[in-house]
Amino acid sequence: MITDALIDPFGRKIDYLRISVTDKCDFRCTYCMDEDVTFLSREQVLSLEEIVHVAKTFIRMGTKHIRITGGEPLVRKNVLWALEQIANTEGLEELTITTNGSQLYKMAQSLYDIGVSRINISLDTLKADRFFALTRKDKFQQVIKGIEAASKLPFKRLKINSVMMKNHNDDELYDLTKFALDHNMDISFIEEMPLGVITDHNRAETYLSSDDVIDALSQYYTLTPSDIKTGGPTRYYHVAGSSHKVGVISPHSHNFCDTCNRVRLTVEGRLLLCLGNEHSKDLKSVIRSSMQNDALDSSKELENAIIEALALKPQQHHFNLDEAPQILRFMSATGG
Ligand code: SAM
Ligand code: SF4
Image (cartoon, rainbow, N blue to C red):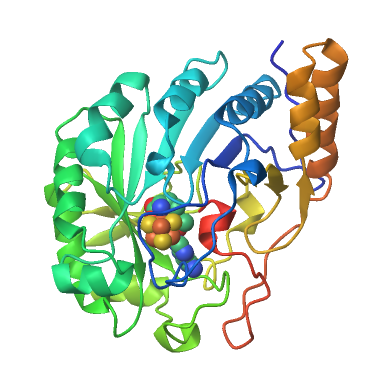
């Protein structure tokens, strides 16, 4: 039976779950992780069967939208099997994915066939040498090939996500926007968040606010604020002469917590109640015990653990770029 049990202490309906299916990645984006990173061992991470089980439990409890992310979700072996199981679960309205695009040249068609409706593709530059500097990998052409492949398929929506950093890629605001619109895609510009300690740059120095992004783009496009919501924290603008939109994700300058409708499941089975706080509950053992035992009592146990976890959801996050990061996990471990 599908229920409606996912309400947090502030009355927010939590109908959006992001699942990180791996902490591993084939890139090393400078704002996301250090070059030398130790990934989790196989024993530490949920199996795909366990991920499907917990996804189905959330859907039974009222989750309408699941986004699959990582690390890089498409590098996990057999991930398409898990996506198909989740997509076919009654009650789910949308299965979406966030990817760095490196595998899309060979997986875009399968993702479409399985029923993934929207894909967010991360791309911070259109310059191959800069792409190498930002991701530490030489895969620019492969990503562009993947974007071209996806843009030929009738997905409900494709979007480019770009993390903007002063003096790193802010001279490409117009080029990235034009690229997205020319490929029938939306684009969102993200303010970098202080998740994990990085050594590549000082985040306070590279911070570029969403307002600066919109001001700069307004020299080229007529942008008008839109009230369109797609379930995430993006604030959208209509672009005159285009059916596609420019968005901004502003964890610093426009706190989006009052409308927060989501929680995140890490690949270790920890439910994170907030991107910018450590509040979380470890569900791994209860997921495992409820998998081993199909009895009604054990699935109730997982549902109760999820409801108990929601009671921990804080009202909002506070990011301060002038302090050392308070959140020591990287975005790749969080499930961005
Ligand atoms: N690997 C996939 C990708 O890059 O799209 C999915 C995971 S990645 C962690 C999800 C999103 O988080 C990407 O759009 C990435 O640019 C963004 N991201 C990573 N670290 C970030 C940070 N410190 N601040 C803001 N966004 C970040
Ligand atoms: Fe990998 Fe995505 Fe992090 Fe880049 S942002 S290192 S692609 S997980």
